[in-house]
Length: 286
Image (cartoon, rainbow, N blue to C red):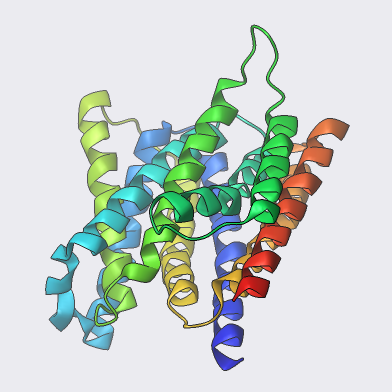
């Protein structure tokens, strides 16, 4: 029970900071190239994580950054961040978040393929229903495949793969080291792209948004790793990710005046419902 409470609090905190971080980055992308914005944010996030390593003395264990699982998680996090955020800059905020909530459906499939978990017909049915919900949100039409929404789905897949592998991180590796490794890899990818595409000047407001987003990102890295490594039931903790859709719809409407159509709203409900059912069945099975 204590482990669950700790994991729930950490996951709930990660939901809030990641959603606000995404909103700030979407605002920045209105005036700054997407890849440059992500790279600069990663640099600041690396700075905050590095200062935390120094303040806590955890820097002494920084050698663990080279552990293959830590590096792999950083690469997947980098891929997820770049792919999903670039898509977010081109589609409504609430829609992108709804697509991101298909993660538990993907985790179920990946758990079978990678972890060889035994998944019965009820959960497979929920996965099928959830995918139908994703299609309601994406709304593919002949000649208009809503490419950016599919890109967001690809970013979500990278995130799901990251989450499936996260519980396998060595217990002896501090969470701060994992967060630092992730921030460094995101920064390297971002600045590598900036070298190719060139640097664009940024306003003081855009830079302020990026700095704020980087603080939230660094905190989010900590919260989500703490949640996944809390020792609680992931089937319980994961349910609290769905609070993000409420935040996303509220922010999308308040800042950009976005209102999903009826079919998309129905799809959001279907995705959330099927995901919660999958998590419920996992808890029952355990």
